[in-house]
Length: 197
Image (tube, rainbow, N blue to C red; front, side, top):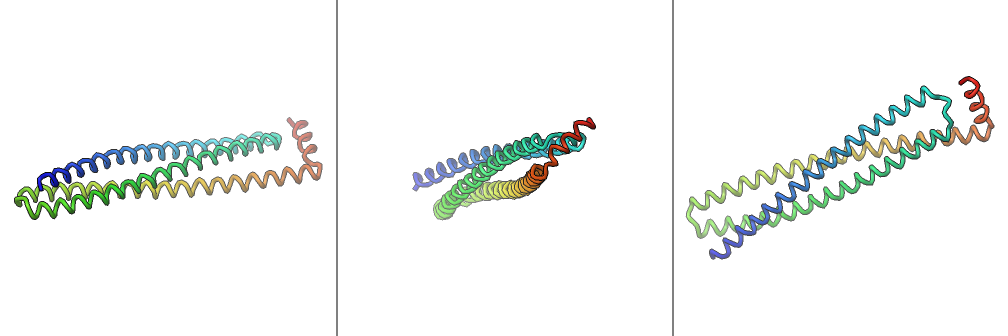
């Protein structure tokens, strides 16, 4: 019986170590999410700067505008891919955490049952306090993980909306360029801009 309790305690310690590792991975994911958020802010500032430059330099050729938009689209797709990878890693982390929690609950339940049957009440009370403390910490960690997932989903939706907006704008510019080419007004606009420059 003593060997079984020692094994349970050892398993509980191993689960606690795994939980600690999971916390480190979660911290890394949060840090990566913050980095992506900063990158998105930089990209937004970049887009605003590009718009200001385009407004002030209206005689810029359409090809340069299209190339700039295409580069921005590639960058947005890269960020979306990174966001998907981070979300997958977070989901993997959550499933691992759920598995650890399940095993932990099983071991603790078994330990509590065994301790109620075989150990003095003071020993039982100490283990009960440890169990309650661990359960509270696990609930806190689960709440943080849920918040990270929620923030990640909001950020992903914002990125997708920005991508759709830029794609629509890109298509509009392509259509305008195509109309200008068909009507022959592209050369006229460029000649007028060059003569006024």
